[in-house]
Length: 137
Image (tube, rainbow, N blue to C red; front, side):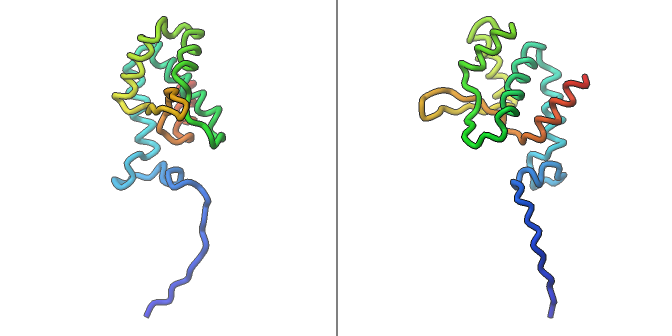
């Protein structure tokens, strides 16, 4: 009845990367929507909060090719934030991380060693676009 012609079109890209800019209701986290949402949420936060998030983004992009990357540990983030004068106590940082969690900008999980790791659940391409857009502002 039908004569189908089959072509091998494997991209070897992760599915999330292939659909990052898809405008479909089936794809919940499209690239442009995620970038727009991220930008709007961060514009409503304080400059220190944006600085904290920027540290997380930069660290995650530095480690994007590391297959064993679990995230940035809370203590490492706290130390980096103290050095950048973004927080003065771990309570201040925890309050800000709660805000990020509420907006689903970060995810936390405990490693096998019991350490709390922080991860931004977005594609590296979206984070690169965010950094470029943030640098332009």
